[in-house]
Image (cartoon, rainbow, N blue to C red; front, side, top):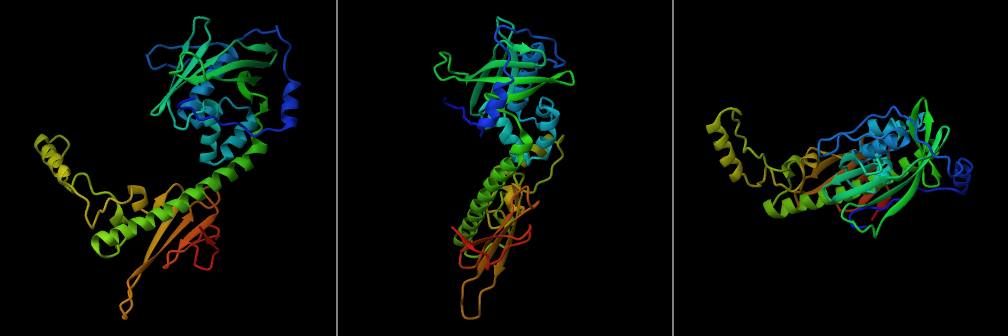
Length: 344
C-alpha cells in the first residue's frame, strides 16, 4: 500500500475470546436509525447513512481530520474518559490506527450505489478510501466489514480488510472493536502514554543534538558563539518594515524589502521559530555560554532540554556539557546536569 501506514493494535487472547462471545448469528442483519448527522464531502454535496454505518463513517471522518473532540463522541463512555486522559500525542496515534495515515487529512463522505458510505481521506501525501459494508446487527450490537485502500488502487490489489464492531449506548452507536480486539482504553492508556512519552523523549534528544550542530555552524560562519538561541532563528520576512495593509505602495516596498532579507548574525536561519524561542514539542531548551579563559581557551557552551509539562511530554531531562557529552536523568522537569548518566 503506497501511502498508507499500517498500524496494528496490541491484543490478547482474552480480548479476542470476549469479542467472539458477542458475535451475532449470521443472517440477522438489519440497520436501524441513528442520531448521527451528515458530513459534507469535498464536492459540496451532503451524504448521510443511517444506523451504525452512519456513526462509523463519521467516526472515521473524525479520525481522518484528527479531530479529537469529534472522534471522542463515537467512543463508549468508559473509553471516552480514558481517551481524554491520554496525552495529545497518544490520542492522535490512536486515531491514526483507524485510517492508517500518518498525517491529518480532509475527510469526505459519499454513498455508493448500494447506499453505503464511502469515506475518503485526503492528505498531502496521498488519499485513502474506506468502504463500509452492510451491518450484521442484533439488538444493540452491530458488526460491519470495512475495506481500506489507497485511493489510487482502483484494482483493489492491496486492500486492508477488517470487521469493526459498534454498540448502541445512550441511543447512539459507538465504536466497540477493531477487528478481534475490543477497544479497552482504560487498560491501554498507560501503555500508550508510556510509548508516546518515550518517543517524545527520543525526539527531544535528537533535537538537542540538532541545536548543538546549529550553534557550531553559527560559530564556524560568524567566528563566535550566538548570544542566544534567538540568533539562530529565521530572519523577519518583512525586514522589520511595518506597513499598513491597505497601503498599496507600502505593500510593494515591504515585498521588495522581504526579497532582500538574508540570513545574518542576528537571524542565522539555522533553526525554526519554535526552537529559536526555546520550545519544541513539549520540551524547553536552555543555552548557556561558558566564557573563554585568560589562557586562550575557546568559549564553550552547555545545552539543556527539560520536559514541560513533566510527565506528559517526557520524564527525562537532557543535558549537553561543554565537552559535547549528553547526559539524561529524571529531574521531575528540572534542568539536568553533567552528573547524570551519559546517553549516546
